[in-house]
Length: 376
Ligand code: COD
Ligand code: ZN
Image (tube, rainbow, N blue to C red; front, top):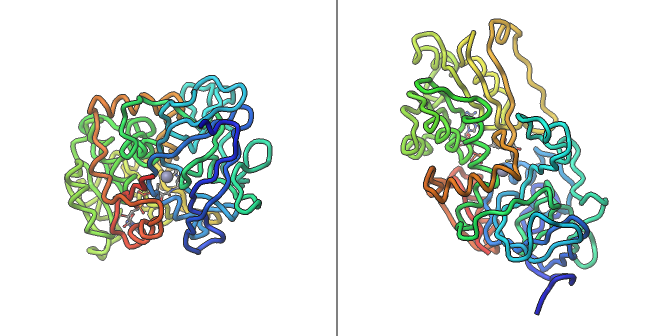
């Protein structure tokens, strides 16, 4: 019996207030309104940004359904939806692509004006929510909320992908993989033969390493305070790994020593801290070095550094979703994965059912997982 046009009751992981565990409860998911799409989620990765919302470091409205790295199947569509239809395999997009704003129209832009940066409402365009628990509204995260058996997204926030793509792997193209890989390929435009330093070897940092390698970098130095992250970084292309805790000197000086006093050509901050952002900036060559800030520090933080760091020519550049235009690029990235142009398996360390979501966050917080994939 078709569920189109009806309220669906299903399981979702709800967080009632910051720093509290998830409760897996039965919620109600309303049908999609005009230009919206209701999706049955098949698999969703646990990303550090979800944990940042949980801890209160990234602002959001509670109660909330987190999750923004998933793959699923369209269950039904609202009026006026033309780009997907029921039955299509899709990836929800935490960064939309409306196609009309200045970023979407610019060939190199990707931060669509419809993305919720700064002060997120956690509501749909009409100011209401499609999720309720016992009749009370629950907020969404970045218009995706994929820790739910069903979710509703705007048409601009969903991309149709190859029907044969394995959801439990390509869900990573919805955030972690694309964010890191694109930071190297698009935002830095890493050149063949160059030297790169990657600060932070979580799922996103490892994807930066894959991007640096694919772009032909000859030396890739991984930097992390957890040495357990080193073997995988080396498997994916890091030529060496260093732990800042093993040195008395600041890590930027260590990187200068390792590069004959010149510094690296490209550095990437993939942790989300202001001190490591300044260290990454100071690690690249004073003249032609490029530092790409991928991590986003806590909402209230400010960064300060001497203007001398950029005066001689260094570039500091941010990168959101790897610089990809989301709706246009995600289907192509999935095709590239299906053609084995890159691998996602090394990023997946654990799989769990939705009911065990709290275990997945424990693993992340303990530094024991790269990506846990929740299977629905
Ligand atoms: N020095 C070196 N390494 C460190 C330090 C430090 N001081 N502190 C932590 N680390 C290491 C950790 O040991 C860990 O290995 C790594 O840094 C971070 O990895 P994860 O697994 O916690 O994080 P990822 O890879 O899943 O995500 C990293 C991001 C930077 C993308 C994320 O945390 C973030 O900042 N997100 C906000 C940016 C954003 O909005 N992105 C798009 C949606 S995710
Ligand atoms: Zn993410």
